[in-house]
Image 1 (cartoon, rainbow over the protein chains, first blue to last red):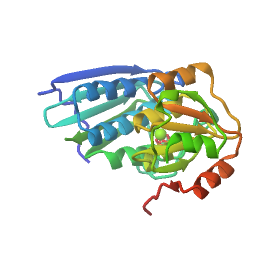
Image 2 (cartoon, rainbow over the protein chains, first blue to last red):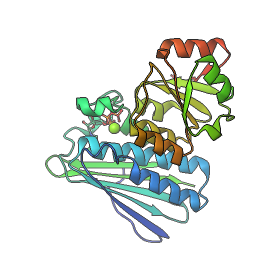
Image 3 (spheres, chains in turn cyan, blue):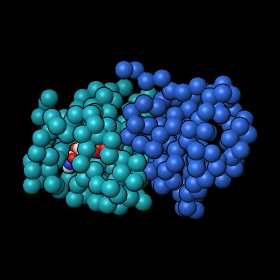
Length: 148
Length: 117
Ligand SMILES: Nc1ncnc2c1ncn2[C@@H]1O[C@H](COP(=O)(O)OP(=O)(O)OP(=O)(O)O)[C@@H](O)[C@H]1O
Ligand SMILES: [Mg+2]
């Protein structure tokens, strides 16, 4: 896995959204906005779909697992990059978190239809490049790239 | 199968985006786990679920799904219906349980989503 590095060079457009902890009613708005901007730009359907899934799973994780954070999208000539950063609590065992079926989601998240332990593996599956780094007590950073 | 036929077979009411009732779906997926929907569903698929929150609409939006059938007599709140209208997603409600609604549709020729092992 490549180290997490934000690379703003040659980004034609940058989108930035704040995502609040436990804000279930608004969860998904950032991903929805990213999807509609990309659609307006004429980005191809398959790429659009993969970005939408990756962004949405990551955004939901911010809402249900983190103290809140940001979702950013860099639109580049050859790819779309997503950067997800949060303020904690971080993930102690990333391999375990990446295991399909592993979830620490609380009852409120499960009632919303989440907590299957599918999100992180699915994010990795739909992206061409996936990086996750985390420090317990600090936060988690995820970079996802989808090439055209 | 077109949505009109689906509504007939499941005796469903249409509660959002009636304009889309002549859409066609090729398969259906029944689940209350949105992450499973996000992992397994692709293409023109009917989502059947007993969940009625915003996230169901958002999930359908991300996957470009055109229709959701709510089972067990569940009906989402007005703001959830409004979101579906905005996103041009047809919402239908049936009294049948997930199993019975799925069974009726399967019997009428609608197939399930096949997932790789
Ligand atoms: N941003 C985050 N901050 C802290 N912990 C996280 C974060 N994202 C994921 N995790 C941890 O990793 C686990 C697995 O995440 P994953 O997205 O795969 O599944 P889930 O969110 O629990 O369920 P699903 O995504 O299927 O709804 C979570 O249950 C949680 O313990
Ligand atoms: Mg998740």
